Length: 163
Image 1 (tube, helix red, strand yellow):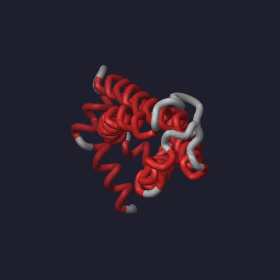
Image 2 (image 1 turned 120 degrees about the vertical axis):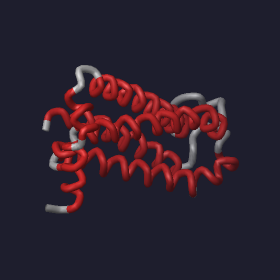
Image 3 (image 1 turned 60 degrees about the horizontal axis):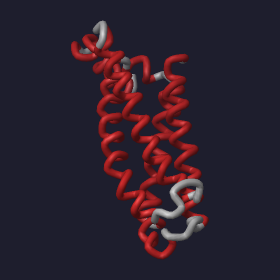
Image 4 (image 1 turned 30 degrees about the vertical axis):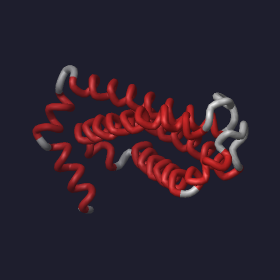
């Protein structure tokens, strides 16, 4: 049995995993918190991406929008990671073979790489272009990729229940 499968089985069979799974309210409360956190995360990311695409907030600089939303983005990310891990813990053995869960993890990794590339390269020159109504093509490309990837994360996450 692969090591990852053993890890998932151990989490699933743990007392804490069983408690989460069998509780009348714990799983549904954690799931609700997870959905709200992802809403905050995606909502704030979408605001910055749509600004870079020139769709909204054209009169506000990209860095001003980023300063306003990034603390909320980080909060949404932190809560969604913690709540997501708790949901995974409760159903780890099932998630191991779930194609939607695997797709979600791949899309999350790609979204993280996209954000890292943006913040390490394109955003460093924002002072040169941030006041323009339309951002340079590389910023727009990462914004489109971001919106597509995070939409995919949400769709794959929702599809987990059906596999």
